[in-house]
Length: 331
Image 1 (cartoon, helix red, strand yellow):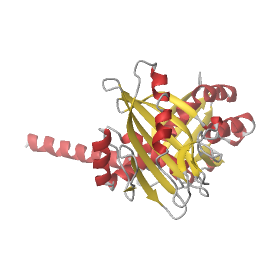
Image 2 (cartoon, helix red, strand yellow):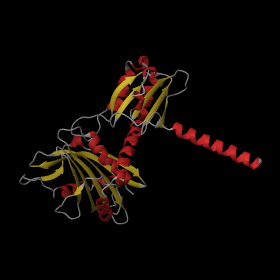
Image 3 (cartoon, one colour):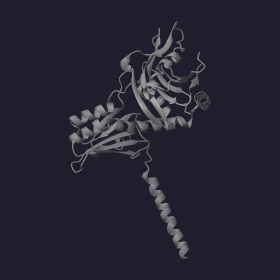
Image 4 (cartoon, one colour):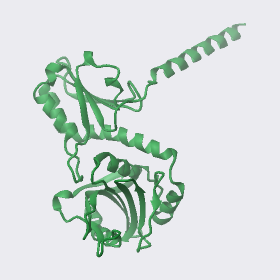
């Protein structure tokens, strides 16, 4: 009898704990668009320098786009007491709390606090001045927290229904796996070593390119990656625009369009990132691209994966970001 009572108590406790865990998870899905942010901050603190700094932090122009567009869109600022359920359902919340009782400015990250999928970054600082100092020191890290949330959401969506035949083709040519979203198709290229996948829309297109090329591994690491820029131009030059005589694809020679980032660890593999513009000579096509290069020291080869966008009328950031997120699915 005693054992039965103990078993019953254990069952009730387990059932109660299970219900508690489930109830703590938000059942609501997020509202709003990708890269939308709601700022929650009291009105008095928000006025003046803090509002300018938060706007600079979140709406600074993203690099590599042919038309200016911020990293994120600030939808609104709202005081904590005035924040509605709809406000708290946005995919990204940036909470700034000025609290004189704390010792120093810090930030913390929470996931799926009010809805899912959601990223909440909370900054707590003893003064506006200390919050501004934190923004200066951790601007890239804070943006990256929001970016990771958008990346994971996008990749989860595309992993549900990928283009499996193209993924097999990609692995055969590159030696690595990467999710290729549905509705891409493989385009013919004059260079059989160059992979080219396209997803067409009525007024825009998304491209994925990949190839391997010899690399001088005696050079410094950064120079190794930069040395493949010429190979990228040579590969792209094999692609022409329909109906445009003498046309060929190439990287733009506009120096202000280029930005570089090295030593990016993605699933245990180190990549070099370059952002810039592409164009078609003797035609009017062009757009932004982001390319990733990883070096195999043993084979002295570089693997290059390029994501490019043609969107002359549409906002570019989200369309390019959903492509470049795919590099984080490589393994």
